[in-house]
Image (cartoon, rainbow, N blue to C red; front, side, top):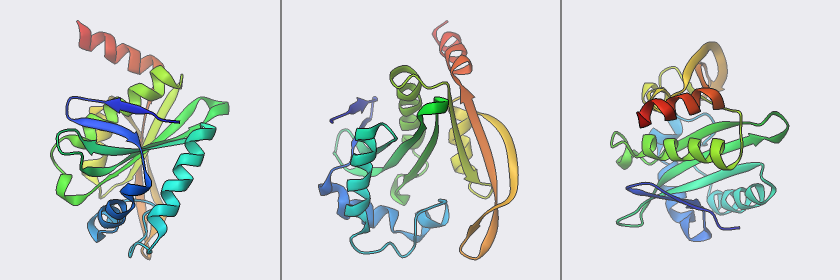
Length: 186
């Protein structure tokens, strides 16, 4: 299965084993691990290759799509954007991480817009949601920029590095996505 999406500046594709070294380097940084819910630090040796294999198996089953976000002009891997799909409920959780050198340049928002469009237009989802630790304001600003609405704050919802963290939940329905599309084409 080969899936390739594009934006003005990005190629959004499945991960390949050749990406493992950069996944380890980018996701393994303390700055990235600190702001994500599930990336370990230190990042274990060999874990990136195993994770890539699991993402390819999950994509084949249509359960999850983990996309490598690659800068079009240089082909450098910058991060990951994923959809964890619940087929029975026609919804998915959007998740992402980007290497620290790529923060604050609009790459995550650009990728999120395209992946959300893929979810609604190609997977036929009815709802996409995302969550981030309250202290990770940059992450939920991305959620807002792609049209998601704040749905609530869950106090002390996750345990991260020995501390309970509050989580912000955002979501968008197909109807709101289509309404936003119509508003942007007028």
